[in-house]
Amino acid sequence: MKSRSASLGVVITGGTAGLGLAMAREFLRAGDRVVICSRHESNLASSLQTLASDAPGEEAHGIACDVSDSRQAAAFAAFAAAKLGVIDRWINNAGTAGRMRRPLWQLDLDDIDETCRTNLSGSMMLCAEALRVMLRQPAGEGGPRYHLFNMGFTAAGLRSSPTSVPHRASKRAVAIMSELLRQELDAAGKRSVGVHELSPGLVLTDLLLRDATPAQKRFFNAMAETPETVAAKLVPAIRAASGQGGTLRYQPLLLMLARLAASLFGYRNERFFTSDGEWRLGGGVL
Image (cartoon, rainbow, N blue to C red; front, side, top):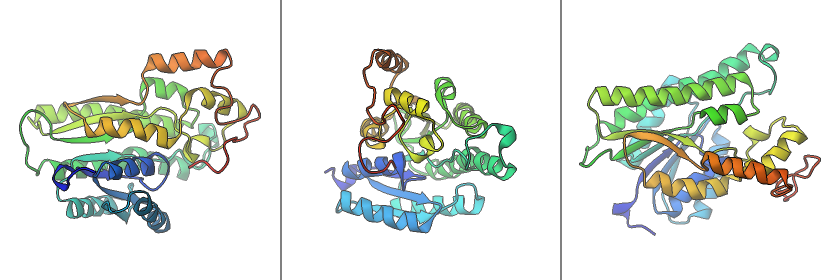
């Protein structure tokens, strides 16, 4: 366990399920202090209990927050700053793929609106709030001391995702926002915060698997990983982050291509799903 003086203050939005919860667990096990949020109070309470059981004695806090609501976003940032004192890492993980995986013309307008507000507006407002906090903190020397991570889509992610247009478009816009934000910080001479894109690849969560076809699930056998596997690799890299920004990938493009090629020869088939698309490992997918 790390000493309290060496631990990091970490904020994870959408930290009550899937990759967000798995990352929170890994940070706690590293001795860091963590603040999470969820839109639903019941999810928050059960997730904090899970984290307390998985990382006993470590410091985890949470608050209900709809990231697409400006007042709740501001309140969440104030809560995180009060609990952590100093925020070293902020991860905008909260997002939604929408209620239905359908062509754009078959989607309800409310569903389109909610997806774009959560993924893009929510990430943008929380970037603003995170930076307001981080830029007030001691700057230190030798490059950025604090690091902000967004989860937009790379060009490869945009092509490989099976989700709807609002989800893919809004997540690609998040990646563009990160680049523009780095430019703004550089132009303003703000060197204490780095802004990064976090690219976890295909993670086996409800968000990915909703309405997935058997053919898509066979593709996931080759390319996807569990939240725990991804978090175990990403969290040490996030903790060690440096520089003004860039993209932190779970797996590089060449490895993705190698995995895809291997699946053509029967390797990695039925890792998670049978040929009929049935989950084969027992239990559910987070």
